[in-house]
Length: 439
Image 1 (tube, rainbow, N blue to C red):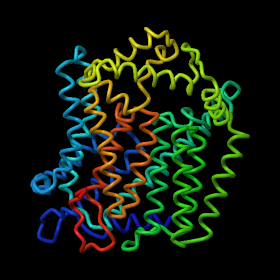
Image 2 (image 1 turned 90 degrees about the vertical axis):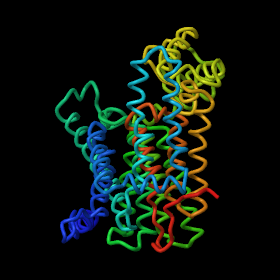
Image 3 (image 1 turned 45 degrees about the horizontal axis):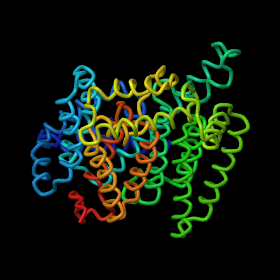
């Protein structure tokens, strides 16, 4: 309730226009960026509409002038936009133009957001408001998903589905469980950031809000049964505990976090069938050196898909198979190797590094990986833990999901990567960090 009250205060304390009728650029940027962050975990289908609002705000505020002035002194946004440029070049040797065009449409955020976000000025308090709205969006999204599961359990075919309605894809029908888990992990990192470093704004998260938020999001990640989400949760929890113990920030919170993760793990393992099944699948996949190529089992088929993707990458390492032909080339490889399970589900590489390499070659892999390395080095240099946490979350998820092949993944990456790199404000607002040079 306090978070909602502070958000309302933040969004009503000033007008979109000044007293003389001119547009309040800071205010308009806050509204459009905040709504965009809020809608990402709520409704991926509405993201294009809110992207249009971002562009309109950018143009009304003459953000294009600020962006290009920014680019003259700092070429870093060009590096991130270069990935999209390589996908455009990949169309030159593509046979399936229609699929390629659709793929470019999906990935358009890689070009658009690094272009416009540097031109959208924000104060530190507005920066924190955007993060708070993303957290609120994650909470409401998880609440809606839970309500939908309760409805299905109460009124639909309970005997056939049973408690499975509270796990994985049945729990999150609109957003892939892996992506929702990715959002929730970042929401936990944002809660931690706002609690310990959001000291300039009424949106500062108190201890109870952070603890309750951590417990709620952690529980939901376990119910989603996303392997990448669980790995990320364990790593982030360990990092938070370690940082708090070293920094002597609190003794109670690390104990609560450790107790929460341990309790939820054992309860989920004993009571959530989907969680226990996936844990068993991973164990069996690792233990068996030979896999049945026709398998449908999630962990085993993913290992087979990775091997097939590596073979494809070695065939066209320099330029890839083409932006529009990557899907068909992958399916053809599955057919050749007799991978019936992967072929039936038309799986992609389930690894963004391999997926990018197959499509546009090693240059694309290098640019994508280089963007992550640069971001984490910048985060480390200016002690921006939230940026480091974001890169870790993206990297772990990208190792097991092709996150740039769906709007739910590419928009999240492109938005928060640009947001954290180009709009970050330290506690001391007199320090200028609008130009995140690596050296």
